[in-house]
Image (cartoon, rainbow, N blue to C red):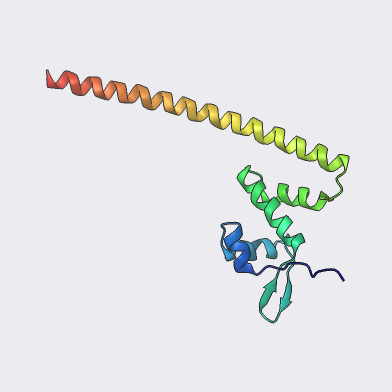
Length: 128
């Protein structure tokens, strides 16, 4: 006899993924999650758990919900070359975008340092 699949409530998901129940309901309204119902209570499966994990990972990587949806729809637990290639493409795109953002942050930090130096020099000059 096989043991029953673990199920999750919406509050389990919110706590596990450090998100809001509103966000989870939004993903459901977008067709990314499909919980069973027991009256008003949502019952999520392990498949929903995996999908939400992928959504949250995509969010951290700066992917749009449409991009996450594309990868979720391609998801095959046994893996396939098309899925792997697309994930690698998304990783490369994210890496390039983040490198650009990092460069922008480094430039802003240099500007802050220069401005701080000018203000301190002006303050020191004023004290003389």
